[in-house]
Length: 443
Image (cartoon, rainbow, N blue to C red; front, side, top):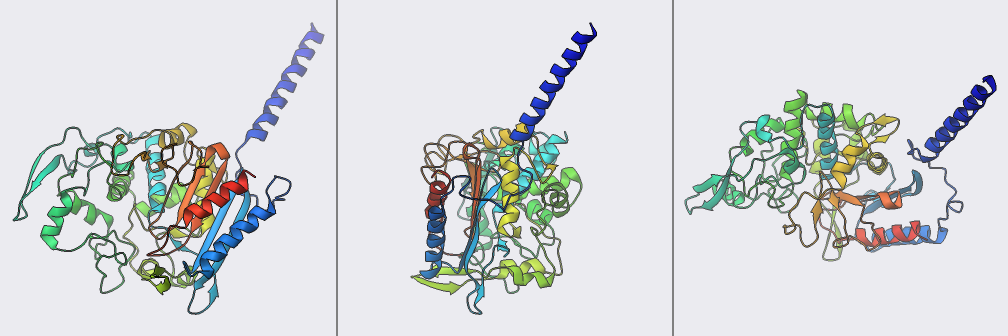
Protein backbone atom coordinates (compact mmCIF):
# COMPACT_ATOMS: atom_id res chain seq x y z
CA UNK A 1 0.00 0.00 0.00
CA UNK A 2 2.85 2.40 0.88
CA UNK A 3 4.53 1.67 -2.47
CA UNK A 4 1.30 2.52 -4.28
CA UNK A 5 0.99 5.80 -2.37
CA UNK A 6 4.61 6.72 -3.12
CA UNK A 7 4.11 5.93 -6.80
CA UNK A 8 0.94 8.02 -6.87
CA UNK A 9 2.76 10.92 -5.22
CA UNK A 10 5.57 10.76 -7.80
CA UNK A 11 3.06 10.73 -10.69
CA UNK A 12 1.23 13.76 -9.24
CA UNK A 13 4.50 15.66 -8.77
CA UNK A 14 5.57 14.91 -12.34
CA UNK A 15 2.18 16.07 -13.60
CA UNK A 16 2.35 19.28 -11.57
CA UNK A 17 5.87 20.03 -12.77
CA UNK A 18 4.78 19.39 -16.33
CA UNK A 19 1.85 21.81 -15.94
CA UNK A 20 4.12 24.41 -14.38
CA UNK A 21 6.57 24.10 -17.26
CA UNK A 22 3.75 24.41 -19.76
CA UNK A 23 2.39 27.50 -17.97
CA UNK A 24 5.82 29.13 -18.02
CA UNK A 25 6.22 28.31 -21.71
CA UNK A 26 2.82 29.84 -22.53
CA UNK A 27 3.13 32.78 -20.14
CA UNK A 28 2.74 36.22 -21.66
CA UNK A 29 5.88 38.39 -21.64
CA UNK A 30 5.89 40.89 -18.79
CA UNK A 31 8.70 43.05 -20.14
CA UNK A 32 9.97 43.83 -23.60
CA UNK A 33 13.10 41.91 -24.56
CA UNK A 34 15.40 44.36 -26.33
CA UNK A 35 18.34 41.92 -26.54
CA UNK A 36 17.12 39.84 -29.45
CA UNK A 37 19.19 37.88 -31.94
CA UNK A 38 17.08 38.47 -35.03
CA UNK A 39 18.64 35.62 -36.96
CA UNK A 40 17.71 33.14 -34.22
CA UNK A 41 14.03 34.07 -34.48
CA UNK A 42 13.99 34.09 -38.27
CA UNK A 43 13.95 37.86 -38.81
CA UNK A 44 15.73 38.97 -41.96
CA UNK A 45 18.26 41.77 -41.62
CA UNK A 46 17.46 42.74 -45.20
CA UNK A 47 13.81 43.31 -44.28
CA UNK A 48 14.91 45.43 -41.32
CA UNK A 49 17.06 47.52 -43.64
CA UNK A 50 14.08 47.94 -45.98
CA UNK A 51 12.10 49.52 -43.13
CA UNK A 52 15.10 51.73 -42.36
CA UNK A 53 15.25 52.84 -45.99
CA UNK A 54 11.52 53.50 -46.16
CA UNK A 55 11.42 55.66 -43.04
CA UNK A 56 14.56 57.52 -44.05
CA UNK A 57 13.02 58.17 -47.47
CA UNK A 58 10.06 59.91 -45.83
CA UNK A 59 12.54 62.26 -44.16
CA UNK A 60 14.64 62.73 -47.29
CA UNK A 61 11.54 63.59 -49.34
CA UNK A 62 10.54 66.07 -46.62
CA UNK A 63 7.18 64.36 -46.19
CA UNK A 64 7.76 64.56 -42.44
CA UNK A 65 10.35 65.95 -40.09
CA UNK A 66 10.80 62.81 -38.01
CA UNK A 67 9.30 59.37 -37.56
CA UNK A 68 9.59 56.52 -35.07
CA UNK A 69 8.71 52.87 -35.53
CA UNK A 70 8.32 50.10 -32.95
CA UNK A 71 7.56 46.41 -33.50
CA UNK A 72 7.47 43.59 -30.95
CA UNK A 73 6.61 39.97 -31.67
CA UNK A 74 6.00 37.74 -28.69
CA UNK A 75 7.40 40.51 -26.51
CA UNK A 76 10.68 40.50 -28.45
CA UNK A 77 11.51 43.95 -29.81
CA UNK A 78 12.44 43.49 -33.45
CA UNK A 79 12.28 47.13 -34.46
CA UNK A 80 12.71 50.33 -32.43
CA UNK A 81 14.19 53.26 -34.36
CA UNK A 82 13.72 56.94 -35.07
CA UNK A 83 14.70 58.99 -38.12
CA UNK A 84 14.85 62.68 -38.95
CA UNK A 85 14.78 65.83 -36.85
CA UNK A 86 12.63 66.54 -33.83
CA UNK A 87 13.47 70.20 -34.45
CA UNK A 88 14.32 70.91 -38.08
CA UNK A 89 15.37 74.54 -37.62
CA UNK A 90 17.88 73.70 -34.88
CA UNK A 91 18.92 70.34 -36.35
CA UNK A 92 18.09 68.33 -33.24
CA UNK A 93 17.95 64.65 -34.23
CA UNK A 94 14.98 62.48 -33.33
CA UNK A 95 15.30 59.62 -30.84
CA UNK A 96 12.95 56.83 -29.71
CA UNK A 97 12.62 58.63 -26.35
CA UNK A 98 10.98 61.74 -27.81
CA UNK A 99 7.49 62.76 -26.71
CA UNK A 100 4.65 62.84 -29.24
CA UNK A 101 1.22 64.43 -28.97
CA UNK A 102 -1.02 61.35 -29.08
CA UNK A 103 -4.44 62.95 -29.55
CA UNK A 104 -6.97 60.11 -30.03
CA UNK A 105 -4.64 57.40 -28.77
CA UNK A 106 -5.89 58.76 -25.45
CA UNK A 107 -9.29 57.19 -26.15
CA UNK A 108 -8.24 53.57 -25.76
CA UNK A 109 -6.54 54.29 -22.42
CA UNK A 110 -9.67 56.08 -21.18
CA UNK A 111 -11.79 53.12 -22.29
CA UNK A 112 -9.56 50.63 -20.48
CA UNK A 113 -9.73 52.79 -17.35
CA UNK A 114 -13.52 52.76 -17.53
CA UNK A 115 -13.53 48.96 -17.87
CA UNK A 116 -11.66 48.70 -14.56
CA UNK A 117 -14.77 50.26 -12.98
CA UNK A 118 -16.86 47.60 -14.72
CA UNK A 119 -14.68 44.85 -13.28
CA UNK A 120 -15.06 46.42 -9.83
CA UNK A 121 -18.83 46.00 -10.20
CA UNK A 122 -19.50 49.74 -10.04
CA UNK A 123 -21.11 49.91 -13.50
CA UNK A 124 -22.10 47.70 -16.44
CA UNK A 125 -21.38 48.40 -20.11
CA UNK A 126 -25.09 48.03 -20.90
CA UNK A 127 -26.23 50.35 -18.11
CA UNK A 128 -28.02 53.48 -19.29
CA UNK A 129 -25.77 56.52 -18.83
CA UNK A 130 -28.73 58.32 -17.26
CA UNK A 131 -28.44 56.02 -14.25
CA UNK A 132 -25.26 57.94 -13.31
CA UNK A 133 -25.92 61.20 -15.14
CA UNK A 134 -29.66 62.00 -15.24
CA UNK A 135 -29.04 65.09 -17.37
CA UNK A 136 -27.84 63.02 -20.35
CA UNK A 137 -29.97 63.83 -23.46
CA UNK A 138 -33.00 61.64 -24.13
CA UNK A 139 -34.25 63.54 -27.18
CA UNK A 140 -33.17 63.33 -30.85
CA UNK A 141 -33.19 66.46 -33.02
CA UNK A 142 -35.40 66.09 -36.11
CA UNK A 143 -35.36 69.58 -37.63
CA UNK A 144 -33.40 72.83 -37.30
CA UNK A 145 -35.35 75.96 -38.22
CA UNK A 146 -33.92 79.02 -39.98
CA UNK A 147 -34.02 81.03 -36.76
CA UNK A 148 -31.88 78.41 -34.97
CA UNK A 149 -34.72 76.80 -33.00
CA UNK A 150 -35.16 73.07 -33.44
CA UNK A 151 -37.60 70.20 -33.04
CA UNK A 152 -37.01 66.87 -31.28
CA UNK A 153 -38.54 63.50 -30.48
CA UNK A 154 -37.81 60.99 -27.68
CA UNK A 155 -34.96 58.52 -28.24
CA UNK A 156 -35.96 55.03 -29.36
CA UNK A 157 -33.69 53.53 -26.68
CA UNK A 158 -31.51 55.06 -23.96
CA UNK A 159 -27.81 55.73 -24.37
CA UNK A 160 -25.59 53.10 -22.74
CA UNK A 161 -21.90 53.05 -21.86
CA UNK A 162 -21.34 50.64 -24.76
CA UNK A 163 -22.62 53.40 -27.04
CA UNK A 164 -20.09 55.83 -25.58
CA UNK A 165 -17.21 53.41 -26.06
CA UNK A 166 -18.19 52.61 -29.67
CA UNK A 167 -18.91 56.24 -30.67
CA UNK A 168 -22.54 55.43 -31.38
CA UNK A 169 -24.09 57.61 -28.66
CA UNK A 170 -25.46 60.37 -30.91
CA UNK A 171 -23.76 63.09 -28.85
CA UNK A 172 -22.83 66.19 -30.85
CA UNK A 173 -23.84 64.41 -34.07
CA UNK A 174 -25.86 65.18 -37.18
CA UNK A 175 -28.10 68.24 -36.94
CA UNK A 176 -26.63 69.18 -33.56
CA UNK A 177 -23.73 70.70 -35.46
CA UNK A 178 -26.15 73.00 -37.27
CA UNK A 179 -27.68 74.09 -33.97
CA UNK A 180 -24.27 74.95 -32.55
CA UNK A 181 -23.10 76.76 -35.66
CA UNK A 182 -26.27 78.86 -35.66
CA UNK A 183 -25.58 79.81 -32.06
CA UNK A 184 -21.93 80.74 -32.26
CA UNK A 185 -21.07 80.89 -35.97
CA UNK A 186 -17.70 79.22 -35.56
CA UNK A 187 -16.12 75.95 -36.61
CA UNK A 188 -15.90 72.75 -34.60
CA UNK A 189 -12.59 71.95 -36.30
CA UNK A 190 -9.55 71.77 -33.99
CA UNK A 191 -7.03 74.61 -33.88
CA UNK A 192 -4.32 73.99 -36.45
CA UNK A 193 -6.67 71.82 -38.49
CA UNK A 194 -8.90 74.57 -39.86
CA UNK A 195 -10.46 75.64 -36.55
CA UNK A 196 -10.09 78.92 -34.71
CA UNK A 197 -6.79 79.58 -32.98
CA UNK A 198 -6.93 80.78 -29.38
CA UNK A 199 -5.25 84.08 -28.54
CA UNK A 200 -3.17 82.38 -25.86
CA UNK A 201 -2.09 78.76 -25.45
CA UNK A 202 -4.79 77.05 -23.38
CA UNK A 203 -4.10 74.81 -20.42
CA UNK A 204 -4.13 71.27 -21.75
CA UNK A 205 -5.56 70.03 -25.04
CA UNK A 206 -9.15 70.91 -25.92
CA UNK A 207 -11.52 69.43 -28.49
CA UNK A 208 -12.41 71.69 -31.41
CA UNK A 209 -15.31 74.07 -30.95
CA UNK A 210 -15.08 73.89 -27.18
CA UNK A 211 -14.35 76.37 -24.45
CA UNK A 212 -10.60 76.93 -24.25
CA UNK A 213 -11.08 78.61 -20.88
CA UNK A 214 -12.78 75.61 -19.25
CA UNK A 215 -10.94 74.62 -16.09
CA UNK A 216 -12.50 71.16 -15.79
CA UNK A 217 -13.95 68.65 -18.24
CA UNK A 218 -17.20 68.76 -16.26
CA UNK A 219 -17.91 72.27 -17.58
CA UNK A 220 -17.77 71.05 -21.18
CA UNK A 221 -19.87 67.93 -20.55
CA UNK A 222 -22.61 69.82 -18.69
CA UNK A 223 -22.76 72.23 -21.62
CA UNK A 224 -22.90 69.36 -24.11
CA UNK A 225 -25.74 67.67 -22.23
CA UNK A 226 -27.98 70.66 -22.93
CA UNK A 227 -28.19 69.68 -26.60
CA UNK A 228 -30.28 66.81 -28.02
CA UNK A 229 -28.74 63.80 -29.74
CA UNK A 230 -28.10 63.67 -33.46
CA UNK A 231 -29.42 60.11 -33.85
CA UNK A 232 -30.80 57.23 -31.78
CA UNK A 233 -27.99 55.58 -29.78
CA UNK A 234 -26.59 52.52 -31.51
CA UNK A 235 -27.89 53.38 -34.99
CA UNK A 236 -24.88 55.24 -36.42
CA UNK A 237 -21.22 56.07 -35.83
CA UNK A 238 -20.10 59.61 -34.95
CA UNK A 239 -16.54 59.89 -33.77
CA UNK A 240 -14.81 61.61 -30.88
CA UNK A 241 -16.87 63.40 -28.24
CA UNK A 242 -18.36 60.22 -26.73
CA UNK A 243 -15.04 59.39 -25.06
CA UNK A 244 -15.04 62.76 -23.32
CA UNK A 245 -18.41 61.90 -21.83
CA UNK A 246 -17.02 58.49 -20.87
CA UNK A 247 -14.14 60.25 -19.11
CA UNK A 248 -16.58 62.45 -17.22
CA UNK A 249 -18.47 59.31 -16.18
CA UNK A 250 -15.20 57.87 -14.83
CA UNK A 251 -14.93 60.93 -12.62
CA UNK A 252 -18.55 60.69 -11.44
CA UNK A 253 -18.47 56.96 -10.75
CA UNK A 254 -14.97 56.76 -9.22
CA UNK A 255 -15.28 60.09 -7.40
CA UNK A 256 -11.77 61.02 -8.53
CA UNK A 257 -10.21 63.24 -11.21
CA UNK A 258 -9.66 61.49 -14.55
CA UNK A 259 -5.91 62.05 -14.57
CA UNK A 260 -5.47 60.64 -11.10
CA UNK A 261 -7.63 57.58 -11.77
CA UNK A 262 -6.04 56.74 -15.13
CA UNK A 263 -2.50 57.10 -13.83
CA UNK A 264 -3.19 54.89 -10.82
CA UNK A 265 -5.10 52.14 -12.66
CA UNK A 266 -3.35 52.04 -16.07
CA UNK A 267 -0.27 54.18 -16.64
CA UNK A 268 1.77 53.62 -13.48
CA UNK A 269 1.12 49.86 -13.20
CA UNK A 270 2.25 49.39 -16.81
CA UNK A 271 5.39 51.45 -16.29
CA UNK A 272 4.20 54.16 -18.70
CA UNK A 273 6.09 56.72 -16.67
CA UNK A 274 6.47 59.34 -19.40
CA UNK A 275 2.83 59.31 -20.57
CA UNK A 276 0.68 62.09 -19.12
CA UNK A 277 -1.61 65.06 -19.77
CA UNK A 278 0.78 67.54 -18.12
CA UNK A 279 4.49 67.93 -17.37
CA UNK A 280 6.99 70.18 -15.66
CA UNK A 281 8.35 72.98 -17.93
CA UNK A 282 11.70 71.29 -18.52
CA UNK A 283 9.92 68.39 -20.25
CA UNK A 284 8.85 70.58 -23.18
CA UNK A 285 12.20 69.92 -24.84
CA UNK A 286 11.31 66.22 -25.02
CA UNK A 287 8.53 66.89 -27.56
CA UNK A 288 9.05 66.67 -31.30
CA UNK A 289 7.94 69.84 -33.06
CA UNK A 290 4.85 69.75 -35.24
CA UNK A 291 5.02 70.31 -39.00
CA UNK A 292 2.81 70.09 -42.08
CA UNK A 293 3.47 68.68 -45.53
CA UNK A 294 1.91 71.21 -47.90
CA UNK A 295 2.40 71.50 -51.66
CA UNK A 296 5.47 69.30 -51.50
CA UNK A 297 7.07 71.31 -48.71
CA UNK A 298 7.64 70.84 -45.00
CA UNK A 299 6.33 73.79 -42.98
CA UNK A 300 6.09 74.48 -39.21
CA UNK A 301 2.67 73.83 -37.63
CA UNK A 302 1.25 74.95 -34.30
CA UNK A 303 2.97 73.66 -31.16
CA UNK A 304 0.12 74.77 -28.88
CA UNK A 305 -0.73 71.15 -28.09
CA UNK A 306 2.70 70.36 -26.68
CA UNK A 307 3.05 73.80 -25.08
CA UNK A 308 -0.30 73.35 -23.32
CA UNK A 309 1.11 70.40 -21.37
CA UNK A 310 3.33 72.63 -19.22
CA UNK A 311 0.60 75.01 -18.11
CA UNK A 312 0.58 76.11 -14.48
CA UNK A 313 -3.12 75.16 -14.38
CA UNK A 314 -3.16 71.38 -14.72
CA UNK A 315 -6.81 70.56 -14.10
CA UNK A 316 -8.39 70.27 -17.55
CA UNK A 317 -8.09 66.70 -18.86
CA UNK A 318 -10.09 65.17 -21.68
CA UNK A 319 -10.65 61.47 -22.26
CA UNK A 320 -10.72 61.77 -26.04
CA UNK A 321 -7.40 63.62 -26.43
CA UNK A 322 -4.67 64.99 -24.18
CA UNK A 323 -2.15 62.24 -23.48
CA UNK A 324 1.43 62.47 -24.73
CA UNK A 325 4.52 60.34 -24.52
CA UNK A 326 7.24 58.26 -26.20
CA UNK A 327 6.53 55.37 -28.53
CA UNK A 328 7.62 52.53 -26.23
CA UNK A 329 5.39 53.75 -23.41
CA UNK A 330 2.32 53.23 -25.57
CA UNK A 331 3.77 49.95 -26.85
CA UNK A 332 3.53 48.71 -23.25
CA UNK A 333 -0.19 49.48 -23.31
CA UNK A 334 -0.52 47.62 -26.63
CA UNK A 335 1.36 44.61 -25.26
CA UNK A 336 -0.93 44.55 -22.23
CA UNK A 337 -3.88 44.25 -24.61
CA UNK A 338 -2.12 41.55 -26.64
CA UNK A 339 -1.43 39.71 -23.35
CA UNK A 340 -5.18 39.77 -22.61
CA UNK A 341 -4.93 42.33 -19.83
CA UNK A 342 -1.57 42.03 -18.09
CA UNK A 343 1.95 43.43 -18.46
CA UNK A 344 4.83 44.60 -16.24
CA UNK A 345 3.62 42.16 -13.60
CA UNK A 346 0.32 44.05 -13.32
CA UNK A 347 -3.14 42.76 -14.17
CA UNK A 348 -5.12 45.70 -15.62
CA UNK A 349 -8.13 43.79 -16.96
CA UNK A 350 -9.29 40.18 -17.15
CA UNK A 351 -8.86 38.24 -20.42
CA UNK A 352 -12.63 37.99 -20.86
CA UNK A 353 -12.90 41.79 -20.60
CA UNK A 354 -10.32 42.25 -23.36
CA UNK A 355 -12.27 39.76 -25.49
CA UNK A 356 -15.47 41.74 -24.90
CA UNK A 357 -13.75 44.93 -26.03
CA UNK A 358 -11.89 43.63 -29.07
CA UNK A 359 -13.98 40.91 -30.75
CA UNK A 360 -17.59 42.18 -30.84
CA UNK A 361 -18.63 44.74 -33.44
CA UNK A 362 -20.95 47.35 -31.90
CA UNK A 363 -21.97 49.18 -35.06
CA UNK A 364 -24.76 48.60 -37.59
CA UNK A 365 -23.63 47.12 -40.91
CA UNK A 366 -24.19 50.42 -42.70
CA UNK A 367 -22.48 53.27 -40.90
CA UNK A 368 -20.55 56.45 -41.66
CA UNK A 369 -17.22 54.67 -41.14
CA UNK A 370 -17.64 53.12 -44.60
CA UNK A 371 -18.11 49.65 -46.01
CA UNK A 372 -16.79 46.98 -43.66
CA UNK A 373 -16.00 49.43 -40.86
CA UNK A 374 -16.37 47.83 -37.42
CA UNK A 375 -15.76 49.18 -33.95
CA UNK A 376 -15.71 47.44 -30.59
CA UNK A 377 -15.29 49.07 -27.19
CA UNK A 378 -12.50 51.56 -27.83
CA UNK A 379 -10.94 50.04 -30.96
CA UNK A 380 -11.48 49.54 -34.67
CA UNK A 381 -11.84 45.83 -35.44
CA UNK A 382 -10.26 44.60 -38.66
CA UNK A 383 -11.93 42.07 -40.93
CA UNK A 384 -11.68 40.84 -44.48
CA UNK A 385 -13.67 43.84 -45.75
CA UNK A 386 -11.54 46.67 -44.40
CA UNK A 387 -7.85 46.50 -43.53
CA UNK A 388 -4.96 48.97 -43.76
CA UNK A 389 -2.91 46.28 -45.57
CA UNK A 390 -3.94 42.75 -46.73
CA UNK A 391 -1.59 40.88 -44.36
CA UNK A 392 -3.38 42.14 -41.23
CA UNK A 393 -5.23 39.25 -39.54
CA UNK A 394 -8.96 39.19 -38.81
CA UNK A 395 -8.15 39.22 -35.07
CA UNK A 396 -6.36 42.57 -35.20
CA UNK A 397 -7.63 45.78 -33.62
CA UNK A 398 -6.20 49.28 -33.69
CA UNK A 399 -6.59 53.03 -33.76
CA UNK A 400 -4.44 56.17 -33.93
CA UNK A 401 -4.19 59.92 -33.42
CA UNK A 402 -4.88 63.05 -35.47
CA UNK A 403 -1.18 63.98 -35.72
CA UNK A 404 -0.39 60.72 -37.53
CA UNK A 405 0.41 58.34 -34.67
CA UNK A 406 -0.81 54.79 -35.34
CA UNK A 407 -0.81 51.42 -33.59
CA UNK A 408 -2.04 47.88 -34.23
CA UNK A 409 -2.41 44.83 -31.99
CA UNK A 410 -2.53 41.56 -33.95
CA UNK A 411 -3.15 38.50 -31.73
CA UNK A 412 -2.94 35.96 -34.56
CA UNK A 413 0.56 37.21 -35.37
CA UNK A 414 1.43 37.80 -31.67
CA UNK A 415 2.57 41.30 -32.58
CA UNK A 416 2.23 44.97 -31.74
CA UNK A 417 3.39 47.66 -34.15
CA UNK A 418 3.45 51.44 -33.79
CA UNK A 419 4.23 54.29 -36.19
CA UNK A 420 4.70 57.83 -34.86
CA UNK A 421 4.89 61.26 -36.44
CA UNK A 422 3.46 64.63 -35.42
CA UNK A 423 2.13 66.20 -38.62
CA UNK A 424 -0.92 68.46 -38.92
CA UNK A 425 -1.22 67.87 -42.68
CA UNK A 426 0.47 64.88 -44.26
CA UNK A 427 0.40 62.04 -46.74
CA UNK A 428 -0.92 58.67 -45.56
CA UNK A 429 2.44 56.96 -45.06
CA UNK A 430 1.40 54.38 -42.47
CA UNK A 431 0.26 51.61 -44.89
CA UNK A 432 3.70 51.56 -46.55
CA UNK A 433 5.33 51.06 -43.16
CA UNK A 434 2.81 48.42 -42.08
CA UNK A 435 3.33 46.45 -45.29
CA UNK A 436 7.04 46.28 -44.53
CA UNK A 437 6.34 45.24 -40.93
CA UNK A 438 4.26 42.26 -42.02
CA UNK A 439 6.92 41.27 -44.55
CA UNK A 440 9.41 41.40 -41.69
CA UNK A 441 7.48 39.10 -39.36
CA UNK A 442 6.32 36.70 -42.05
CA UNK A 443 9.64 36.33 -43.86
